[in-house]
Image (cartoon, rainbow, N blue to C red; front, top):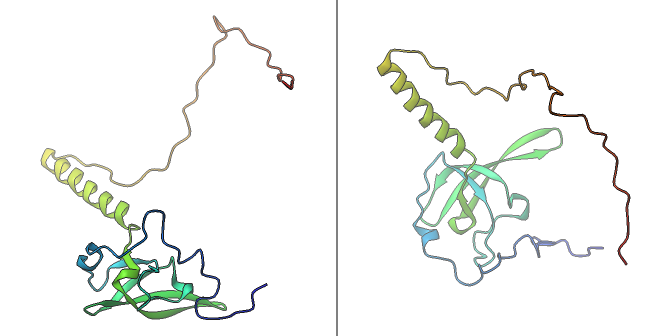
Length: 160
């Protein structure tokens, strides 16, 4: 039963560094460029306590609205009661990373554009919409050379 209700209460596993990820923060973390409008994932890094987000925002995704030399401002939607509130959180760059949630979409846009250009050169139309998996086509199973088999469960035996 918890008795402490501090700012970092019950975050022992949440803020724990990963396996073989302990020690100082890599310098490449500081060389990543963030721009306004980028989508980022918030993941607190326990090696840097400055600019660490509250435990609620750990694992959330937001959009950058402000960039400073060592931190960024992120807009995160928070459910409060029956509505969403737009929270603006200032977080240091050690605690964020670019989100990969749009990567598949951007790859598809690029692939569709390439297909469109090729089809336009040939003078034909091409459908670029995604099509859900269709039902398998109907077929008849023949019994010639394929005798029906009677299936029975194998009896359980212990090998002690």
